[in-house]
Image (cartoon, rainbow, N blue to C red; front, side, top):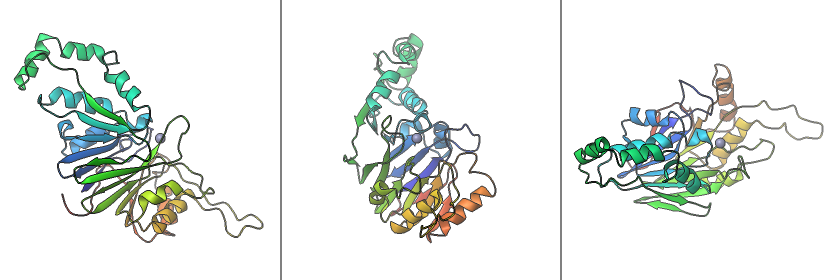
Length: 297
Ligand SMILES: [Zn+2]
């Protein structure tokens, strides 16, 4: 499979980095995992059209992980031949509400969609693409998933783990995708203070991963050892390195870089902190980097 980083940024608008989004190409499927603002453009830069996308999985519903779904969904519907299968969309509880309020018959886009399914100009364009009126309203196959659910496609499967982030307001899933004899793991926005060990929920997902993309929104500095402590508190970035080391991750890629961490000097310090505990291949993620995992597809 091929994994492409469509967005390695944060919620802060950036010309350099799109917000969170990752693309997996395996067999005939194109699976988008999160689709934050700017990632649709990156997907086109990677040579993939909206009509190529078969599946979307949202790790959680923060806008920096889902805003470009509006573009994806509407473009895909508008330019697809009539026999295009409905987009399969998976995500945490709240996903049905999210999609329905956007694209349902009484959703935010009802005026546009009513026009495009009724106006003569739109219908003639639709007929030009091989459609026969009446033009149907766009549909998605929406599935809200729990953390024990397994998502399966042709030759691939996805497991999830509920990772600490902005609960109880949002459920947030880390992801393990297996395909073509390889494993891609994604932390999503796991947010744990380094003192609280661990990213335990991630250990099951990241074990022996060929590629782990890990959240790195900010950094911290290890504090001095307090009297009686055997070792100083470690940094967030060291905790990420320990996870990758303990799970035997082959390649660790940092992502979700906010503007403060993405500056000269800080970047090097963070890399050094991770590399102090992790011997594997370590990469500072940039938009449009791609990785071949397992057998080529
Ligand atoms: Zn988030």
